[in-house]
Length: 464
Image (tube, rainbow, N blue to C red; front, side, top):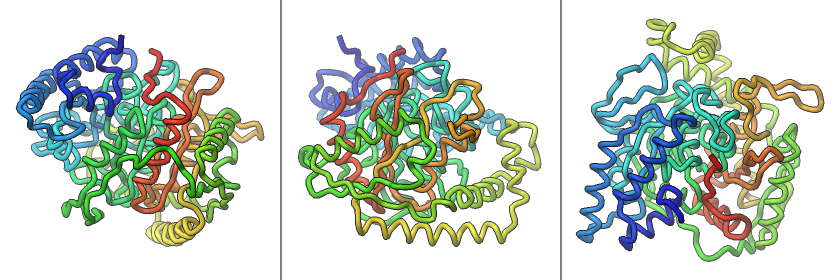
């Protein structure tokens, strides 16, 4: 018999709306699941059990009174520990912020509360989101492997059934990387679509906030609650609200899918390439047309990403780096210290390169509607693994390998959706990403949901 924690957001919302399931039943099931499996997975830094049950009882009363707020009403979620929560510690998984308790909610926290969602806890991040492994968290598919990062706690919570959905942030791939490694769905919206007010910054010009869910349909529902103009975020886009539902059916006739002939399939695991190309074939079976595309300025992606992120991160942390450097973990402290030595001229060159790169990418979308590619180069690395050894003799650091395919969507600000498309020989998830036009989230959700409907059962939990 299906337990409430096993339900996808879409399924849970349907059951809550028709009152065949209560918010208290669902929340208790998720909290019991946290108690059962999180000691092994370690997705959470803080669990807010008492407050969650109070919120669930309030949602139950409202729904019973006919005051249903929408599909997130009464649904338990996890929130990355970069995102402010009034009265609940927000530590960024760092000793630098130990004991920090915000007095106000971040914009996304407030939006989720307004939608009636039930916060069950704050999820681990790689310290201040400055990394792609979240070393303290384990992958629910195999706890000897990493969950990815920096939103590893959020992805692991969704994959293990300890949150119906979760919120992450993405500066170089930090939503999509852990989603791909844990068999979940991660949606990085267009830059500026979701407010970052009240979210600790890694790199202000690259940071995005978005959902991690079990299905693509779920991601569209959460994005609908998160998106909206916020004058407190200087990058926030002022535009009317949009429906991020899936649209009619699963027919993709007339849709043009760009498949890269360079960069995205360079130095990837065979199991990843095979699964992604098979998924593209499934899209063509649904009516889509495949168009080969060449990724512009590919050789500049990594230096441009680092040329922007490193100095911006150091600027944000400069005061505390000088005051309490010993409180940072060694890997993050070294990166922050390195940022002190990036010349302003290099930062300006990186800004110029990004401008040219974004313009070149926008040209691609005159020929295609979406680009399909691997989300990451490989499946989850083993705990303690530092490098990936490629057949051509290249030894690539795990973090560099993971960020290599996700960074372009951050540099260009384009929306990108990661979704599971299979398993490798070890039974670890493989992820594909779909990259769209600016503000093209509805199209990404439509395509991803069509793939889910035609190819795989949606919302599969990790086999803990």
